[in-house]
Amino acid sequence: MSDAEGDLGLGLEAVFTEPRRPPSPEPTLTTFLRERKVAGSWSAIDIRLVGSHPLWGHHLWNASRAFASYLDDHPELYRDRNVLELGAGGGLPGLVAAKNGAKKVVLTDYPDSALVNNIWYNVRGNIAEPDREKIDVQGYVWGYPVESLLKVLPGEQNEKAFDLIIMSDLIFNHSQHDAMLKTCDLVLSKAKSAEVIGNEDGNSSQPAPCLLVFYTHHRPHLADRDMAFFSKARERGWHCEEILTRKYTPMFPEDPGEEEVRATVHGWRLTRT
Image (cartoon, rainbow, N blue to C red; front, top):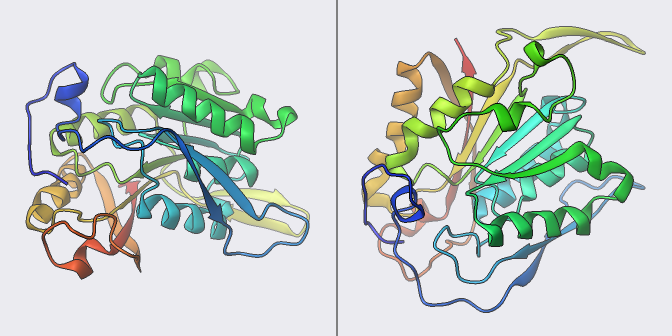
């Protein structure tokens, strides 16, 4: 990955300041294999990736794979709840949430037709038609008004909010940290503690609404700039805690920097203080 940084702006080149890599092949298909075995349930998700794209949508990132497995292991975070994925790319984590019982899943990426249409393709390929009504796909620019995100949620207008926000490998966009946090501030449910809900076995607690941020330091010498996201979040009143580290083969083996750093996915949970 390049080290180029840019100023905040409205255009695609200003939002995503990475220069283009050499062209990739035409759209390709990759398969996420479920690690948790559940009899009679899904075992794999096929994700189509766009060809070469300046927004990096042509990669299924390690963070996305780790995210998908983590969500599969923790359905209590989203079952019967509203989920938003920012910068969804192929949409893998959000699709896991949809397949595992989320009430509503809104998958978003930059409003570019290639990206948005490709997410819809993956929805149609992995979600049975009767269940597609609980999924919405939108083009959305971080930091912009959120009415379009909230209006598709079920319930009364003044109660609409998301219980889980997914951000997978986004914080390397250093110029966009404030915009990402602004959106999260506006759409995450204001509930501050676990809600007690009833089930057949009695009462159980539902986790507090949260933002999950998974990432890799693809440019180790800029790790401090990646981590500035969490410093800004704390200044805005978020509690930040690391919940996962997992090793993979580095996404870009020929890139400079310590390989172990570039091979590690980190997962953080952010909740309102």
